[in-house]
Length: 216
Ligand SMILES: N[C@@H](CCC(=O)N[C@@H](CS)C(=O)NCC(=O)O)C(=O)O
Image (cartoon, rainbow, N blue to C red):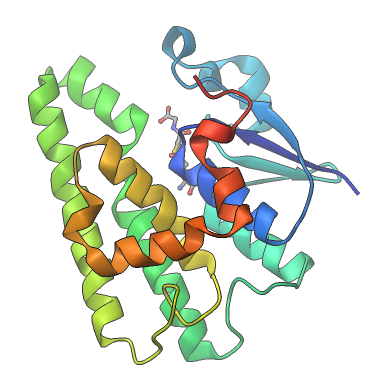
């Protein structure tokens, strides 16, 4: 069995998948794709061959290529069952997907490299305006995530109960990005506590951007 991950150390979508692979104790070969090198190595023909969308992550499992971090995490969960990253109960499962999608669908695309490059290079916004843009969408997303947790009857050490789920695979990278783009995680004490519980697990710690082979 072979697993390969095309990733970039600071990519939050790649970070999600690294956490999931580690939680399931699945060893994998790491291929760094430098999103910053020379306009971005993701645009090179050699990587387009791997992922025509020119984005990371891409997982290759025994020759099968899968892109989109949530699709990858769900695939891993359906293929390697333990520990489960999605609950069995349909309502709980929907809650975990809902939290995950707040981050993966409604926040990250607006802070993504090609989005912010477009704001800068095509629409000619300055760095301060782009920073304000990113903070706005990050805060709106984390506010929503936080508000959903406050009314979720399933409390615990993690986003949905006492075991880490796909939602935590999304939350931790988003909090890392939030800090990087100037949103203090201290603004969200409950989310910071969940992140602290996650950071105590080696699966999360080993997936941290600074611990990746291509970290700069
Ligand atoms: N929805 C995709 C997002 C993938 C994505 O946007 N990845 C970013 C890094 S976090 C990327 O490759 N950006 C390159 C670019 O925008 O050119 C997923 O969840 O995998």
